[in-house]
Length: 109
Image 1 (tube, one colour):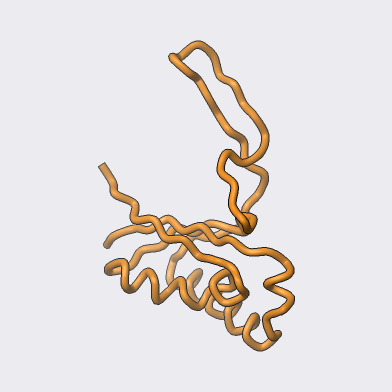
Image 2 (spheres, helix red, strand yellow):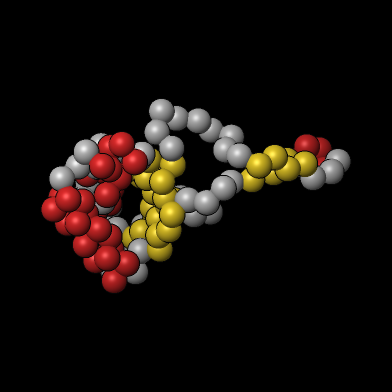
């Protein structure tokens, strides 16, 4: 079954302006995704890693990419196809609470 890496973007302001019952339904949906076997978690502080030309590891704390909304979390899910992955993602807190849920197909090699 195809795998998808997802990134949820959202902020507290969007979360807070979403009605409580809708937020709760989104959290309940996340619980169902976990029961389905989706690996998910809240984003911690990232570390950038570089080793240009193999000449030594350099690290920098903080994200490399930036967006209008902060990254809230990640998930790895299996779905039959992108349409199913979209359907699963569309009910998550980031998608519901004025954020964005990004889906990347994981093309294994």
